[in-house]
Amino acid sequence: MLPPTRAEDVEGLPAGVALLHHFANTEDRRGFVAHGRRLTEHDALATPVDLERWLREHDLLVGDAPDTKAHQGHLTRARELRTALRAALRQDVDGDGQGGDAAVGYSFHVTLTAGHGAHLTIAADPVDTALAHIVMSALTATVKGTWHRLRMCPAPDCQWVFYDNSRPGRAKWCSPQLCGNRAKTQAYRRRQTT
Image (cartoon, rainbow, N blue to C red; front, top):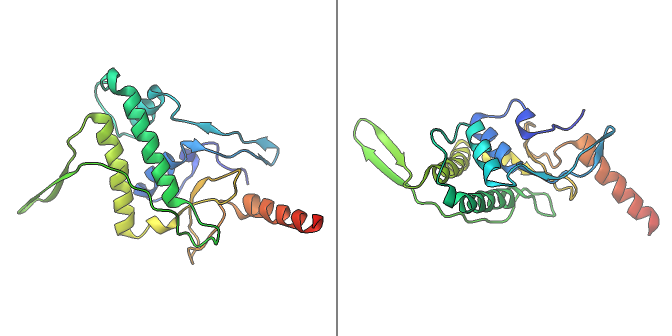
């Protein structure tokens, strides 16, 4: 089975998890050959225009384009959020899925009213509001119990963020057939040379 070309090509993800999966994989570190196809590293958020396009494609940004003076700052904040998200999803060496802590700063205002419940207001410009919705997706995934199934493949030449659909929820590799087998082959070769 060929790996997906884009994160958006992965089907069957829960709605809130899909947004996190797609955003984390805008930094695609895969750099290996799979079934004759060369995967090359790329960053889907290389420019402020890329960020705006990605946010619009994911219905996080509507209306007029944001202030052009803030474009580079938006891109920096988006990349910082992505780095924090990926760090939190990274599996440690033991593969227990306990990635590092990552802090992200956003200001939220929640209004609680009788009959209407809670309403979230984000006092920021449209791009910061869009990024805050990604943060809220992470909070929602945590509350729904789906966060722990998002993982980063530990293969150094992959690091694809994947959703573990397995019943026990202990998958280590994005693809046991690709990355798992490559790791086993590399370990075997190391043992043979020692």
